[in-house]
Image 1 (cartoon, helix red, strand yellow):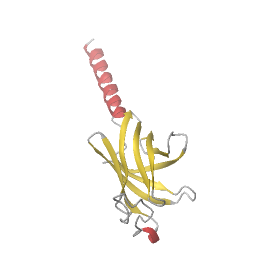
Image 2 (tube, helix red, strand yellow):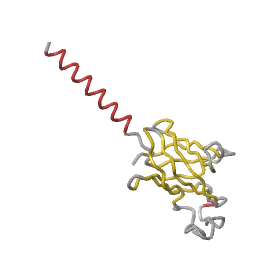
Image 3 (tube, rainbow, N blue to C red):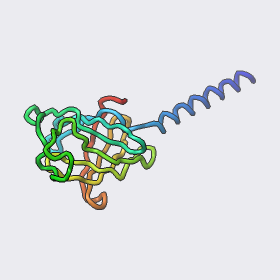
Image 4 (cartoon, one colour):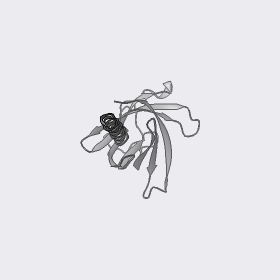
Length: 151
């Protein structure tokens, strides 16, 4: 009888640990982005959490011709205007809504200077779908980013 109770305690503990691991999934860490048309590696973005919001900045640009680019297309009132894109915070104000969905964020496309609403869905531990949109989430585009490292 004692062995049976120990077995159930161990199984229950394993299930509890597994459930904690699933609920602790996060978008924090380094992510590789890809060009929408060529699917070539475009940049690496580091996502971190401050308070209840998530932010992301470009930490690497793969195109050697764009590594020293500045954001000339950004709105002149935006503090990122005329700043170097590599190292720039492009993702702001993202909030976790449930286990695998973040919303209410803003994302800057430094190539055209536009700021879009943004959401992220965690597809798997190593893949997210980032959606940039105007107005309703139907009017936008999605990108899949691949995890490089966790924090």
